[in-house]
Length: 354
Length: 83
Ligand code: SF4
Image (cartoon, each protein chain N blue to C red):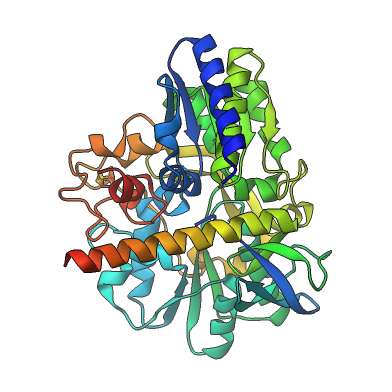
């Protein structure tokens, strides 16, 4: 840690927040930031009137229950082989999770590539790749679908649960929580989208958007920039993560997403249906769409009783304000998705702030 | 889940490569970063390089990971001592 950088960021923040003179609420959109904030003890370094809100930035947390239930239904079919990232197996569906089912046909993969390899290895089964994640993760799925098409694989399918971060930020500000003063923007989503992508938030809502990486210096420098912008009433897009994030992002990755997927409205857990907030496969790739292949209709299902994930994800309540937090709901026995992934807001609070 | 890890490309043929982060090596693909060469450092997410990064960025992150690993080892030790 570079103490001089941290010191100067802290004093910048103090000065700006004193000038603002009211409560300032900054949402860290990304779950990795939520964890980093705790790890570095940053919450204790903030001016008294600066509050951080954890946002809907953990893909596992915002995957709606209808999707999880569909995964579980597919996992029960003997003709399917489920390939999923590890985070997803613990998410509770209506009455069980993949992990609790302990079915032989569920495989944890580290990449979409492994899922394609599974399909080649098991021609007698239909592989269903559980594709969740934001723009950071989507390109890998797109490459896998293209690859399956090139290989002429008939037994590789994708259950698309990919989501788009920007429409969710717009949705938050257009009603779900208009008390958010600014966004600390996700580092690795921005690697793909580019920092310029947030111009729409600044243009439409006059809120500062600053991209930061995950080191303490960067987070504090990012927050200091945000506070200064608010104090000067000059909201803008800025980035303190120029070592990895370019203004234009990664055009190759964006191009591949675009080639395979198209934008659609989609359900986010806790936030409801978000216009343009999800992706579906384009017409020429529908052969690989698990939902079409198995004739599945997905219905949004109700949240588990008592779970406040929806409000947590919008930054309206803190995890500890949920009645189940730490009692009925713990990382070992999660009730809601925010307690599942290590990057979920409830899981992070449970680990660091009890 | 969106975390990407910096790693150095130590082997590369076409878009298939081997990446190394702090001595851990694994197979990755460079389909999304066609410009990368042997010896470059990339951020790897879910088996794919998503961007080239500077040495400086990688070093900071590796140090951070080492610190976290150390901290967690200490915590586990402390837990072990409690029990
Ligand atoms: S503590 Fe558990 S039940 Fe409460 S909001 Fe978080 S995940 Fe949902």
